[in-house]
Length: 145
Image (cartoon, rainbow, N blue to C red; front, side, top):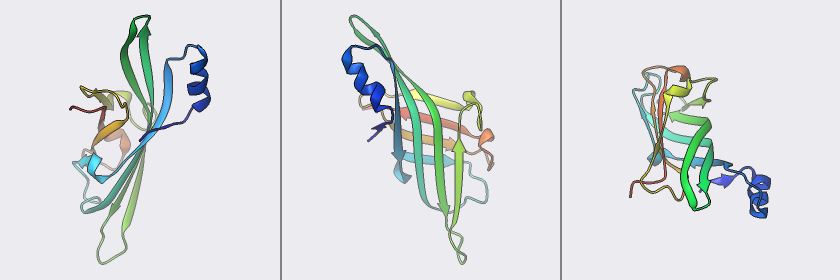
């Protein structure tokens, strides 16, 4: 369940102030995240956690809501790998559009059902690299039910 990071803006919107953009944070786990084309260092994944910070913008008219757009602010990806007989290894990746990864490498997909708006699936193509600038990321907001 996403949480509202900017509650002041959210609650003040109820007072007829016009605001079309809200900030959220959502966590995804092993079943909701797919990591493909992993480098050799990340071969036997034990656990995987992800936190996505994003904004949802609402395009509206007098008649109602026309569209919802999404902008990813950051993705924190934590992967724990079994390194038997040694201790478990942990890798953390900070994926920030236009800082650690090109904006064009993050593809946002909207499900056929957008409410609730939280991200439901994340696919990271590591492209055999440990450097986030080489990654390709796909995020599904909403569901395809």
